[in-house]
Image (cartoon, rainbow, N blue to C red; front, side, top):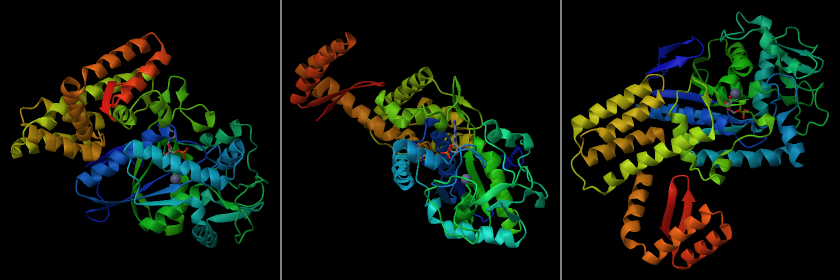
Length: 472
Ligand code: AMP
Ligand code: ZN
């Protein structure tokens, strides 16, 4: 398989260190608010990567942190503590909002068919580990104490800006937010490993440490959680492109200083989901969530399908119109699959199966080209293969694509079967009347008709995909 590596800026053959096994680390969410659909684009594409690696027969162990401490609004050492900001906004404790938004994150992931990583670690449960690694960095001379905080000394490294796309100017971000630069730093690029003094008197979560009561910086959590669970060598590290600097740059600095050798071979960065007004961001307050998509009548998997139709290394523009187009294509796709689920089972045509599977494999094996993988899916439907072969292929592809293709097609086939034959004419008539009432925006009448339909034992739902009638 070929994978683009942000470290080398080129596509490379993906070769895990240990044959047949892959260690994979993902930066988890900062749980001070709901994840927005931009964040979830990153997790969808990382999910596809993980599932494709498994599809090729590799044994993947994936670890993710939950950031519940230390992440400041600038991504560096300036700005407010995101968790504290969330807690104040909701008049709750930091731990209460961490629990609430962690659960909300996994509920969203479940709706989008994003698999939960094998190991999930909230940063606040690893404080001893952070202190151990920071102490070692102090002993090795890579960290220093200044003004009560512990900083990583970037001047001790041969190379700090490992991704090559960033420079000292990018560190001005925090300063632009109107925050004073930190005078304790020996070098501009140095970053905090442990905060004691100088920030947030009202910091809720604090722990004892050899340097005084305080709390960890954001970057150290991912290095420690990864090394503890995946060992000294990491095959792939993932995250959104904004994480490359300073977060991942700092992770590499401290991990390699601690280990004394290179740490992670491949860096997989997902580019941003933008709206017409720019990058989607939690700190802006107004943002799009999975719940909002549902409220507007979209199946969350339509959003997953929308994401699959573009490449993870290109930024993607979200608009309702684009999502509507995806909803229509998704619906048509399911409609094409539906009759296959009813056709008599035949022998699988091995030659056709292998031929069609290999184009899917090639698409994803070429730097996770998901839109070509979706094309391979349509090619299956267009092919001359029999229904059993087609269904077997679709089932197989869907272990990676995660679109619930077969289940949705079966539901559609069953619903179609019942619309024509089994649903009483009286119900169908009421459904038509209700459609007309909705069109005239007479929602009171529409509700009344829905209740009448329910009394006859049927449920009617308007979705972006059309009217659905189901037996109660
Ligand atoms: P956070 O919860 O802010 O720590 O971010 C969680 C993940 O979402 C990280 O991997 C970010 O890099 C990623 N991310 C943030 N904003 C976007 C966006 N607009 N599009 C795609 N990914 C994003
Ligand atoms: Zn991280």
